[in-house]
Image 1 (tube, each protein chain N blue to C red):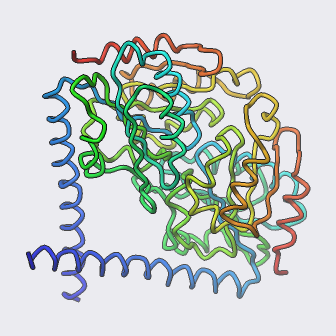
Image 2: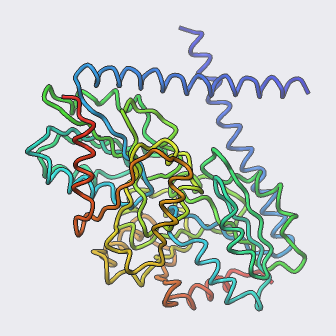
Image 3: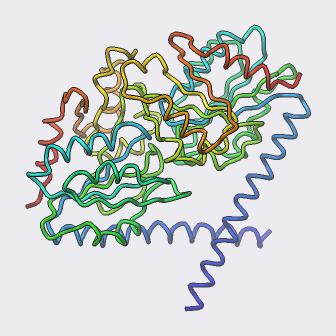
Amino acid sequence: MSNSEQKVTRIVKLEKKVLSKNDEIALRVRNYLNERKIAAINIISSPGSGKTTLLEKTLSKLQDELSISIMVGDQKTDNDARRLSKFKSEVYQINTHNSCHLNAEQVEKNLEKIIRKQTDLFIIENIGNLVCPSSFDLGEDLKVALLSCTEGEDKPIKYPSLFFRAKCVLITKSDLIPHLDWDEQKCREYIKRINNTCQIIKISSKNNEGMDEWYSFLRSILKK
Amino acid sequence: MSNSEQKVTRIVKLEKKVLSKNDEIALRVRNYLNERKIAAINIISSPGSGKTTLLEKTLSKLQDELSISIMVGDQKTDNDARRLSKFKSEVYQINTHNSCHLNAEQVEKNLEKIIRKQTDLFIIENIGNLVCPSSFDLGEDLKVALLSCTEGEDKPIKYPSLFFRAKCVLITKSDLIPHLDWDEQKCREYIKRINNTCQIIKISSKNNEGMDEWYSFLRSILKK
């Protein structure tokens, strides 16, 4: 029936429009940050993989060395922003309510609330979701994936879209490894199968394993 | 501008149409299962919260007592189906590729591959995602949420949509609690704040804590 065919055609057009609108805004965000020589990362993982704890440790270590601005996304609550507000950084919480990812418009709209002339590093802590956020460019320089060893070895091959795009994969909660049936070699092999060039760092916010390598990674991407 | 206003109106109409199409199909699935007196649950959690391990334990315990059919969703790989295929159950793997949730159409299309005359219980293991799958009715009787204690206490209030809809919340990996800074009372309080009527069961697939209560829950929802 020609009627229903027309409807399908219309849906495709709208989807294209939404995607390119996000990309257009992401480009503006990227230009805005580049002009100011601000490095930007988009941190993505499952809920509870340790994103906010990582940021607490990172701010505690680097807050006197770098000027860091942070945008945190969650469906509800400002728990994460409150946890990070005790440091010197500028922090802004976005609540997405029913949406499962941050988009570039939310980032652009709130940039000036937290970006300062002296800002060196802009960190976006995305919504806890291993699937959807990886498809949305937010204007960052690179994506960082967190994968907790408690999640098992095979998540990179089951949910490859994030791992394919990440420049750095942090294997978190390494202090728990002695209590798990978790095969590190297999996990690394799965990550490499999806992305052979990313940097993999095994970290623990509890016993500080790998944290110096993480701080070095952050220093290596700075633009000032 | 009236042009852009018209475009917005059109988007809303299309979204409504997609949702009601899923609900229509979910209703057909529900009727199909009800006519056959098959109980159906939709298991949802973050990636790596222990859904497949729970099912391995459940099948190992109940496969001689109940006829169980399982549909498992992942973006890629048939790892989960392969893990479950060593039991007597009928298992079918759906790969959603770029989609972040199962929908009712995928369930309906594949029902007859795994539902048998004697089936007592139909289990859907959804994609590992705490956000999106909870909005899609698949024709199940009830949703079961898994929340690993390694994910922290506050996920129910940060991602309430699933916990609001779940009839049963399983707190998983309880054997790891001694190694975590995890406040059980706070976690239970957060779940209750979102949903005061759900059953909460703390389980470990490793040391079997709570597993008998879980099996009793499953027996209590059977229809034959």
